[in-house]
Length: 210
Image (cartoon, rainbow, N blue to C red; front, top):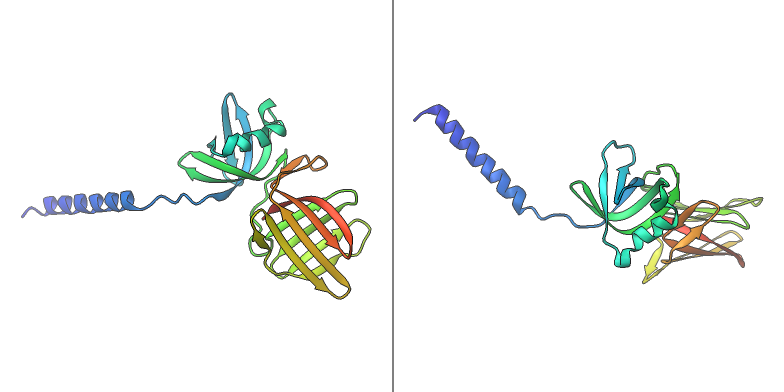
């Protein structure tokens, strides 16, 4: 038998097997968070991932085109560049976006929070900011001492995400409702509306997943 022909036949068999395995492999359609910058060119929505020189075209697959409506409310349709965090599925050079986690005008890239951060929330009048994840829930308020409580996983029931914690003389109740929240001071839109109750003081603002 000709050795060269044997190797060629073997290579053809291995290639056909690999192609068959690739075709048989199920496509992962699990929506994941995409972090990057977005702008509109003509009738195309262009998404450029953080720390990546590639780009993808965005297809809005949300109900009633809600993703596009949210981004247009920040000026995407009139030429403003946005920093966005979109839940979607990347298929080749196309990002099929189903919902908005957050979007800001000219915002900077923020990478996932990892184990250190699961949630962030912030509000104004009075100014406050909350970071939750890893071991602690930390609440900062303008002109007030920082409040640090032990972290437990935030519980989600329907459209409501909840946390309750207490330490020393502080008792904190956190409620995130899955309704869009507009923060004009931050030039942004966020996926959750936040309500905090710290020892009877009510703080209102917006929240987003990390």
